[in-house]
Length: 330
Ligand SMILES: [Mg+2]
Image 1 (tube, rainbow, N blue to C red):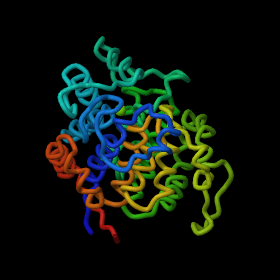
Image 2 (spheres, rainbow, N blue to C red; image 1 turned 120 degrees about the vertical axis):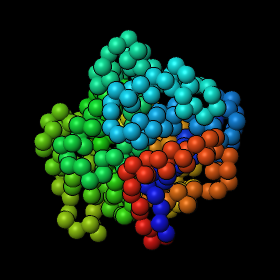
Image 3 (cartoon, rainbow, N blue to C red; image 1 turned 60 degrees about the vertical axis):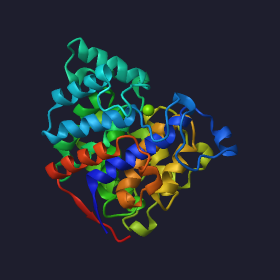
């Protein structure tokens, strides 16, 4: 089965986001009693079924900008256009904006350069850049370590400039890069190997490594992939948090992939973790889209996805600019 990377990312993340939107802020206990099993509507934001949120809007702004080449000013311009004019909103209305994202966009509006617009304090480590970073993947594939770090740093910094957010984005992209060809466990293993070299060259990112110890443990790993192990794989559901903290979202999305065997199972697991359900499911959905291919996203969900034709057209443009076909053994 041939699948295109851009389409898998964009449809994968939007469907996950839309599944989670009605249940954002819902407590896990409630969802354990009444689990989400499909595309619902209304709920938290009173939106019809298939409505995706800021996570997807900003992902689509990034994707559209990349279609004209990489230009950080242009990326920031489209983020501002989304905030001001509901550009790339699902149904003409912006109904959900993160605090740090709003702050950064207002700073851009008042003339702050995009690469220093995001705040970088300890308490600015929300998941607002992680949730919109995946469309960067087709552009950075095959680039060298130094260039990737520079680009990811710039794109995250438009709204989230703390090195912890940047490292989270980098880890996500380095795992995603491998999901075309490998299993989630192999992809995480490959990420760790490449990241070790990157961190050696980037001390600022290295200072944040300890916060990701369930994904990139400090001890050396066995060379043989069969014996490879990461703490996150054995983590209990109770220990997986689904808050808006960037490390929680990254852990939760990887954990969902490690504990499921289809796109559907992965994203429903993410939504049913509750709390920041749309963002956890958006990130999980982007990864699961790549791993299983867009053909394996349930058709009944795609049928009610807001602006599906626009998203597909955008994916085709991104694909034309940065071609990448994955051949799946599924
Ligand atoms: Mg959202």
